[in-house]
Image (cartoon, rainbow, N blue to C red):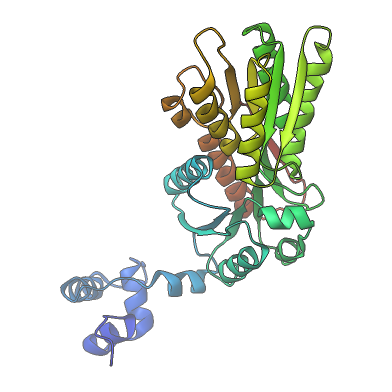
Amino acid sequence: MPSNRTTLASIAQALEISISTVSKALSNSSEIGAATKKRVLEYAKANNYTPNSFASSFRKGTTSTIGLIIPNILNPFYAKVLVGVESYLDDNGYKLITSISNDLIEKETKNISVMSSGFVDGLILCVSKEAEQKNEYQHIKTLIDNGTPIVMFDRICDELECDKVITDDYQAAFDATEFLINNKGCKHIVITSKTNNLHHLNLRLKGFEAAIEKHKATVKSTVITDERSKGLKQKLKELLKTDASIDGIFGLNEKSVLHAILLTNKIQKANSKITITGFCNDMQLKYDSSLIVINQNAKEIGKESAKLLLERIRSKDKSSFKTKTIAVDL
């Protein structure tokens, strides 16, 4: 079925002028007289002409569009990063295309391939869990080698040369653990994580262990991990039932914190309060108002990622890559 869409060609045919003249008239070029511009604009308006932004971008060699690939959208952290990215891009005249990797290399590779095929000027990416666990980054390296500007955030690969936005996971975990010890008087702290083979989670664990080591004369710790949410929850449940000395829990990620809140709400009594902290978001406060949230400032991460990428695109510089560290707070 033929399209009824008004195009540069159909306007040119109707007004018996060249496509080039129509294009220049719509762009308010000084090469076109006022009378011709008026005819073109009036016809375009009357026939609901909409510019083909993709074709225009193809001619200009730029799309004014950025791609964002995140592991999932259900995690509030990634949702807030998206808000930060979109807001900054919108303020700077850029559009955003977002896709989800589901933490799988195959889907991440597919998304990268589609987006980098002329649809975007650059990419913002949080590496999939599978890519990090298998140490497989060739699909991203190929993109970088082809000259596509890219910014990695949160989960990164140190070996890949590109701009990056991170938080100081080690220091944040150290400071949060010391807060439990110094401000909440915790003597036995459990650290819990759904997985322990991701770089940023390992940094958090090391920060926790360093703080415990500093206060080892008065504080002890227990580390529990499990790849499965069900297994992790069961381990924590059994530990809380058998060890009444536990007075602090540190969750390395969102699910770990939620498990801790739900379990302690069921078992703890008024005289045995357990203080919980972790890398989560303030939405968890509805389950436990005393929760100490390690705020990663996700919107700021998104904003800085978009800012770094636009700076790279506009400068066309292929060296001196930057790593921006975003401050966290309790």
